[in-house]
View 1 (cartoon, rainbow, N blue to C red):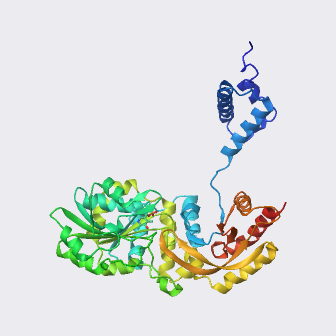
View 2: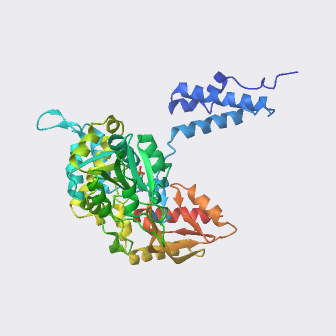
View 3: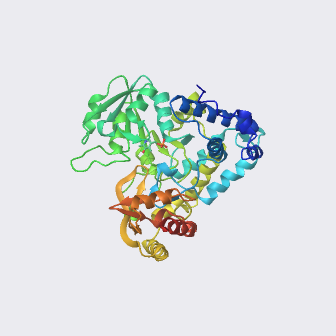
Amino acid sequence: MTSPFRNLPSVSRLLAHKRIRPLVSRMASDTVAELIRQQLQETRQAIAAGHECPPTETLVESVLARAELLLQSTLRPVINATGVIIHTNLGRVPLSREAIAAMEAVSHGYSNLEFDLTQGERGDRLVHLEPILCQITGAQAAVAVNNNAGAVLLALTVLTKEREVIISRGQAVEIGGGFRIPEVMQQSGARLVEVGTTNRTYLSDYQQAITDDTAALMRVHASNFRVIGFVESPPLEDLVRLAREHDLLLLDDLGSGCLVDTGQFGLAAEPTVQDSVAAGADLTLFSGDKLLGGPQAGIIVGREELVARLRRHPLTRALRLDKATVAALAATAIHYVRGEALEKIPVWRMIAMPLTTIQRRARRWARAIGAPARILHGRSMIGGGSLPEEGLPTRVVAISAHAGRSVTELAQRLRLSQPPVIGRIEHDQLLLDPRTVAPEDDSTLMEAIAAALKR
Ligand SMILES: *Cc1c(COP(=O)(O)O)cnc(C)c1O
């Protein structure tokens, strides 16, 4: 009996194949050989499992496909037409032009990241952020790390390890992406003491839970959900007073890091960092890439001696920001200093976008798309765990099944177009919201839709 593996070509034969040979000019020859070996290994296993030996051309195709996957990054820009402004799965938020320019400027060559130009000595990367962050939040001191999950872990580890932290049961939440307050607390070595009930927690609940082992009271902003109806939680000022009376810390995890009054856009009031600081929180923690509108970061602002303790801890070194992030975060914060956040920061530009502008773009889109498109009233969402249930009135272009092509099929074709376009399916229609699409992407979007609708 002849071996079923007999017809498998050798590595060297495939390397010499006329369609594989040109690969060597595009990737390291060792890598090409390795890809061939991987393919042959997989094929051998398939044959052992009873499959037939594929023809050489099929093997060549598979090797070329493997090579293409490696030659281009799978991470690529997409057009977000979902109307969800802070979209964690789509990279959270676009950065301002100035923030991008700042990242580019420090990435080209060297920078004074940790170099004091006046003294000619070693410096600290946080000097580029602290004064601006203090200025815009009203805090005494600031430190920034990789993300807010890291910031919470850092603060709890350094300040509350092996001691108790009291938190309302309704705030011992999961934020998403595996960030659960009880688990982070456990990781930090602090002991979680939950008080109250899911919907109602009174100041007296906190009071009664205080023991000699208590280190802090913690408030966590219930970012991504809302309990409505019969609910109660003490105002931050009361928690601050209670903490002071008992010589405890008050830690305030705001999540979003909003610096702007959201009421002016008809949204519910998202708690601001300035209010948290002014109310007397010892430390206020928030993300760089939610409503702040900057790069991924976790920012901690508050009392100087606490921030100094955080800075000395090795975890701060492990969670430190890279230079491009420092540059982008500083540039984003400067927009607030200049009073131009609403015009320059994409998140705020999208939130502040007038309905008439959206309506005009939706009409243009609908005209370009033609028959299967209609304009509907809809809601854009803030997303990213900010202002759940809140929405901004918008106009969406709704595309229904067309020419035998279902809405799911259409959505898939758009996702696979170049660049991918992501919409939202509701009531068997594909909805596209101009609010989250950069105006300069309008024509690309129209081409993608035309191609997706074509037979
Ligand atoms: C989003 C959020 C976090 C996590 O922040 P990341 O920057 O995503 O790590 C923590 N706490 C709250 C309340 C949040 O909303």
